[in-house]
Amino acid sequence: MTEFVGGTAAPGGSVTRRTAIVGVGAAAVGASVAACGSGGTPAESTPASAQPGTVLAKVADVPVGGGVVVGDTVVTQPVAGEFRGFSSVCPHQGCKVDRVSGGQIECPCHFSRFRLDGTVVSGPAQRSLAAKAVRVDGTNIVSA
Image (cartoon, rainbow, N blue to C red; front, side, top):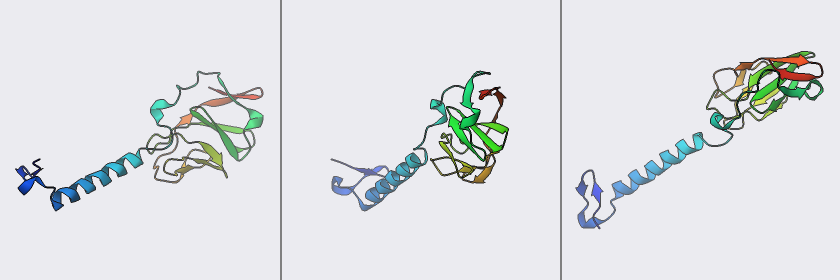
């Protein structure tokens, strides 16, 4: 067996110290890159946006000072009677936010947090969640 290091064969075909160190470094970089993209749901696999008039939630199911994640939409109620809609796709790396807790929308991938108006509380996300039109229709909140 002959090993090539920098375009030349290592004497005796053995693994050189340099080759071992380079290999370990390459594996570490590969693992780091893979870890950055893992976790949560990538945007590509989220369902298509709801058609206008699609029921997203009952008004009673969206707490004042809180919200719910429904498919590709986050519905919040920052103050009584004011409902807002946002994309559930985190602008950092496209993972799906998965909950609204303690008055904040949370992304499980890299722990970005957003206010109930969609703006960033803490990153790594640098941009707000994309707004989505919603409206109240009787006792339902529907896509607009």
